[in-house]
Image (cartoon, rainbow, N blue to C red; front, side, top):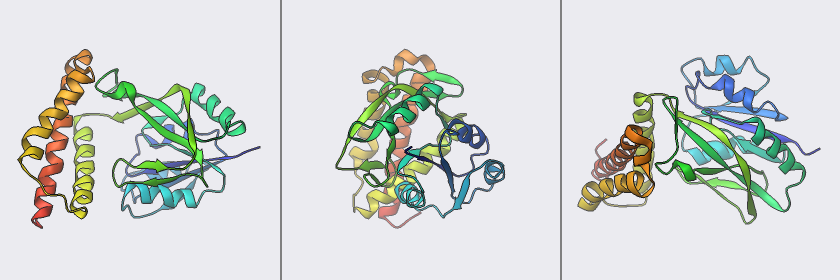
Length: 249
């Protein structure tokens, strides 16, 4: 029987880690790769049958690729700590690894929650990620929104996993700020320079995309809030890049 290794990257995920581990209990091996959490993440994880790896975080791709290199099994399932595999998706995963039909990996769609409420629009209605794939055929690349590169083809699962990405406003802003910092550093390494377009035009465009084009207005006040915060994230990214351009941090 083909076996699966589930990988859960963590940093201070004490509120999520137990349920995340339980949701991939079908896996033959579970690896928690931790970026030196300062809360109870590892203490909780250690109560389960998991392999714990501690590694200093440099970027998302490197972190995941390292964990994949430590996996014992040919199939990898990557699970963010704030995601939950549903029984329906678990069934699809187990069927896929036994009969992949020439696919090297599979996309899964996510049902997005914010502060306990389902967000149906704002662009998240099309949210999909590659989560199950063959270790020898796929590799991550990219600093922030990492992607998988492969010369093979990918299938799609019919059902959705649950994605509890942000528990409150402070958590949301902290994550966006973290991503903005990583993205600014990446752009700075590519020698991209900031101009007025980045600061004055791109943020309103991002708001328009999420609120109008991606139907965020149908999510009511939360849709307006999320679209506005996405615009703020773009603005923050380029302010950080502007500072990096001038070697000011």
